[in-house]
Amino acid sequence: MNTTKYIFVTGGVSSSLGKGIIGASLAKLLQARGYRVTIQKLDPYINVDPGTLNPYEHGECYVTDDGAETDLDLGHYERFLNVPTSQANNVTTGRIYQSVIQKERRGEFLGKTVQVVPHITNEIKYRIQLLGNTGDFDIVITEIGGTVGDIESLPYIEAVRQLKWELGDNNAIVIHLTLIPFLKAAGELKTKPTQHSVKTLMESGINADILVCRTEYHLSNDIKRKLALFCNVHQEAVIESIDASTIYDVPNLMFEEGLDTITLKKLNLSDHGTPDLAHWNSFLKKHKNPKSEVKIGLIGKYVELQDSYKSILESFIHAGAENEVKVKVVSVHSEHLDETNVAEKFKGLHGILVAPGFGERGIEGKIAAVKYAREQKIPYLGICLGMQMAVIEYSRNVLGLEGANSTEMNKDTPCPVIGLMDEQKHITDKGGTMRLGAWKCDLVADSIVGNTYNTKTIEERHRHRYEYNNEYRKQLEAAGLKTTGINLETGLVEIIEIENHPWFVGVQFHPEYKSTVVSPHPLFVSFVKAANEHLKNN
Image 1 (cartoon, rainbow, N blue to C red):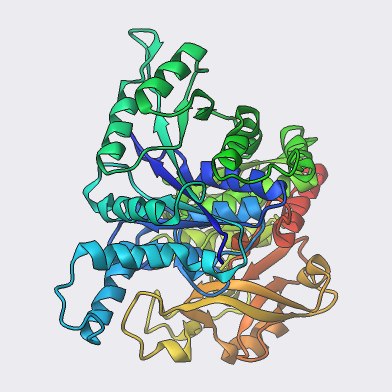
Image 2: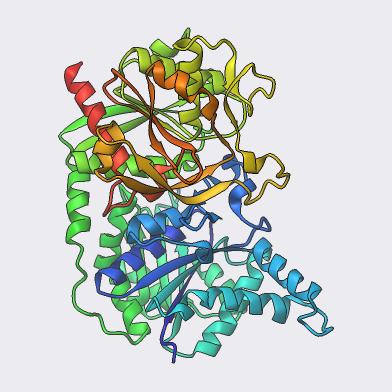
């Protein structure tokens, strides 16, 4: 008999309240009590996955080991739990409908009229329980994207209603995250929006078991009592979620409010004693008490939206704490950068990271950034496109290959030092067709990356179509651009380094996807350490 328990996290009043952070924080507390926990995200948009979405639309696209292009919330789940997610952890309306239509085409519904209820809701219920049915987890937390009352969220809410009834009491609960706004003119917190949000949820047939209230000010007992009375929950199940200085404070704040305790009580589970947060709090202490501060330039083309580079920014927090250094990230738009202003814009920087991206916009600015980092001996990390820009810059300015470029930017370049991967040349569909997921890479001993990872073979996550052109490898290596990481199976160059430079690394993969609180990514740790040494030496 399957004994997996299910927790559903819904949102009301406003979007962007932090359902993912609340879910991840609760999961962390339950994990710290000894339970096996995972989190999944159900997204109501019709895209099959976020892979084709512009970062301005939806923030970064997060990639899992098994090659799934997913919502950025899965990054929060992994960073908090230090447990890999997979394709099963992110489901969209597009994927649900795609699956149901494929079944209809195969005749699996025996001529029945295919409808939202029961066919779409049954598919949603099946996807929700996939992880629970593996036997690998005691508790599955499911975050429902969007806001209660949204038209596109209705099938998910109905599926939750049905599941809650089917699984029975103590096996499934609903946590409703809502907003308690403060009206400055009136000088008070207002509960009415939350009451209306809970009413909307109840009209869908669901009673919230726990109410988590986002607020800028502490909730008095009177407000909690009022919320409990009018929202049909026990007062101990009204949880204050006050604004925190960092998302990594939230597990401790939720512990103080008793979110994990009331959750275990509702699910009829033992509390296993106080959660073990020793490692977590050690990280927090170092994060909040740095011994120095470094400034690292993040050179990208989507810098207006912080979520576009969410995993990179969080990786700097992890690596900063590991080095007991505060990393101040200075965002620089590559489209506004060239060789005439790069020195001015980079003044005071101790490290330069050229970020991933697609397309030709802002490319010359990225190349100018690479050149400045190389010539001025500033620690440099290039990720994916950032590695490719380093190869192009070196080819042009050191090797003397005039017009060297990527065929992504100029298909007629005379020196295609970066080209389309062979297996990509006949692909026309854009979604889910890149080189994705975890791939092995063999490292050269006594290199920056060899010493950083302290192992011969690594596995890192990829998301790209274009690659280092091996036809130019001998020339580039002879000129000092060394290949220090390669996939032996494909022959693809994964890592490049520059000789006679304090710290200059370009990687074709995305190290930021694997950095967590418990395991800061070694490349980011080494890069921040190099930036700190640059600070001391200059």
